[in-house]
Image 1 (cartoon, one colour):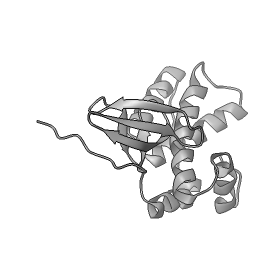
Image 2 (cartoon, helix red, strand yellow):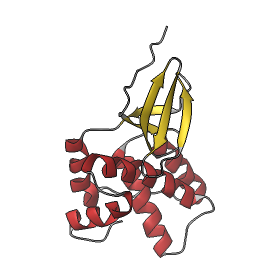
Image 3 (cartoon, helix red, strand yellow):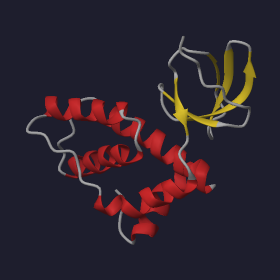
Length: 157
């Protein structure tokens, strides 16, 4: 039998539906979560697959920000394959992959080449990455982009 991870009240988690959520209450069989900065609440049954993982460490997120300028974009010969790469990158639940999505979408937006639905991938990656940075570094979500740009000494993304 597979054991389900348990989280205490106050723990921040990444959820499949998107973004960073805080455990408000752990009850028998479920968690009550609130969305970071939005305050929206939801009840998540244990073992539902909605909870992906807890946040990474502050040291790791600082390293990720330092590496942002060197993270390559995703490359594909057509939109169908790029969409598949976006789906794979999101499913990996990895900060560097989220950066790749954000950089790729930003470059494609500048050249007016976004495919239908591409912005949704970008928004989900932003909700994960910027939410994690916001919580771990204690800065408002809306200031994360400028924080990364200052750290890189260049525009982000």
